[in-house]
Structures are given as structure tokens and as C-alpha cells.
Length: 421
View 1 (tube, rainbow, N blue to C red):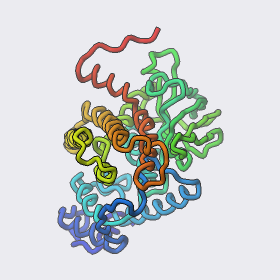
View 2: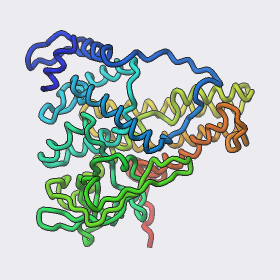
View 3: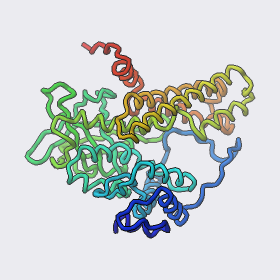
View 4: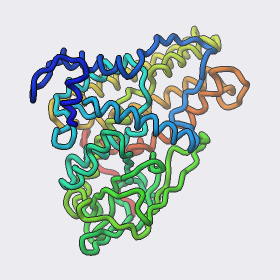
């Protein structure tokens, strides 16, 4: 059954076969669907000392919790997609609804009023991998994966970073050698979020070691369940294991699963990286509700809300958060107009982590030793999960140093750093 057929049964006025609903009709359709399948989000008033005091940047879940959360997210994703809201702007030939971006914004605004399962497990697949497939994959791969990814049947991950390459993606060494209509992959990737629950991965490999490093790369979509793929969790200093290292030993990938041209992987990678930095930086400048509320309340609880230095630090966090948000809106406006964003995505990602650093600096001033020594007081030592997660965020999506080089060299026109001898 097509999305259009399902959607016409959701209670909205029927615009007619093949017709496009007005925004008003679409909003009514969305509300009717959400009223039938979700409950309204209750008003949440923050009260110091009540509820969970967790402000962790990364999920700290057991394998059993991950499996339960994935099953819940998958069921909801299928329900949303089958009702016509799973890929609102996507091309109809791949399962999307083919509507303009303002329809997606309308749905997101309506859905914000309802309590629904977390879809974070699909964030990398839908935010980074799926757009790359749409732009660079063969028709076979588009037909095989795009609908299933947006329906929640498939989880995707990104396989870029390597132990010896880090944020210098062009220095990667995982090899792909052609063998007839297949490629044989050997190598290692690291810091792969969600690899333990992923079904497919976007991988960049070196296919010609004799070419300059940017020009000898090729992208592929690899089956994460294929023989020779081994996923090992990496334990973080927070205690959780949100990242993984992934080993590839004689893994075979059909040439039909190649992304773009042979040795054209750098262009493919840039598509993904731009979407990655948009996803990471798009949340603002490093704080947001409930974190911002708790930042103010911890100052009050510790009796430092009137300290002029503390007030200045907190104000600095919020001012930078607001400036970063406006920068993000400029980038989103470009994307909505069909343009590629310029330096805004690198600025957004750098602003995010810089403001996270400002946040834990003010927390150090407020809490002192209580930030690193557990006194049992609510809302104090819990912030250590935030503090210990910031270094990971400073690496994800390109390290702060790489972002500064991009801005300095490509935006400000400064000379490049000297290459290591």
C-alpha cells in the first residue's frame, strides 16, 4: 500500500488522487495520526532534587536495554512510515512522499507536542548515510535500502575514522581490492557509533595507493553481518560503550554497492561529513533544555547565583549558545533553498564543543570538588558524566583542531599548516 493511500485514511481532507495536501490539511492529518497513536507530552516543570539528575552526553545502556530500545524505536518507525510521515520530503520512487521541506517542519512542530519513542538509533543512518546513498549510490542500492532505512527496518553506521588517520580522513589505510564484480576489504575502523546494532555501513577505503591520498579513495555500502566483519565495543571513561572498533578481514562487497566513481570517494565522504556536522552542530551551541535549566539551578542550589563571576560565566554560555543557533539557522535556510551550506557546518560543530567546554568550566567554578567526588548530593556529581563525555564530542565529526584549520584555511584564507616531514 502506498504512503498516499495510507495517509488518505488518517482523517485529513482528501486532496484527491495524486494531489498535494495543503499545509493545513497536512497538519490536520498529522494531528489525527498522532492523536491515534501517541499521547500528549505533559508539561514538565523542573524541580531541583526531583527525578533523574542525569545529564550524560552519551547513552549508558546494557546490551539488553539496547535491544529493547531498538525494538521500540523500530515499531514506532514502521507505524510512522506506514502512515505517510516516515520520509515526508523523500522521492516517491524510493518510498518518500515527495513533499516540500515545510511539510517536514510542520510535522516536526506538531510531533513535538507528543510523547514518542527516541529515534536516536537511526540518527546516523538517516542523517548521514541515507543522504549519501541518495546522492551517490547505484539504482540497485537506492531501491534496496532507502525505503527500508526510513521505515526503520535497517540501522546504518558510518565507517570513516581509523586508528592511524584520526580526523585526517584522507590518510586512511583500509584497503579495497577489486576481484571481478566484487571488492575485497581489509582493515580497521574506529570510533564507529552504533556499529553493534547496525545492518549496513558506509565505508571509505583506499583503492589506489599510488594516487595522491585524496584521490585514491572509494566509498561502499557494506553489509555489517557479512563474513569477516567483527565489531568490538570501546569502553569509554564514562563507563558506557557508545563507540566501537570494526575489523574487516577479506570482506566481499559487490561492485553494485560502490558509492560514486572508483577513486571518487573523497566527494562521497564530503557529502557525508557535511551532513554529519550539520547533525552534530545543529542542536545549538552546547546547552539546551534541560541542561540550561539545570545549569542555572545548580548555581542557585550551591548559593552562587549572585556571584558576579559565576553570573558572567553563565551569561557567556547562553550568549554563545544563541549566536550558534542563529548560525545554524543560516545553514538550514541555505539547505531549504537548495543550496550547499558553506562554513556554517564547521562553525556549528566547533561552537557546540566550545560551549560544552564553557559549560563544564562554569560547573567547576560552582561545584568545585563535588564535580569529581561523589558526596551523594543530587545534581552535583552527576555532571561528571557530562564532563567526561565532552572529549568524545570534541573528536566526533572532526576534531576541534581540524574544524579550526578548515575555517582558517577555507574561510579566512590563511596559509595551510606545514605538512609533517
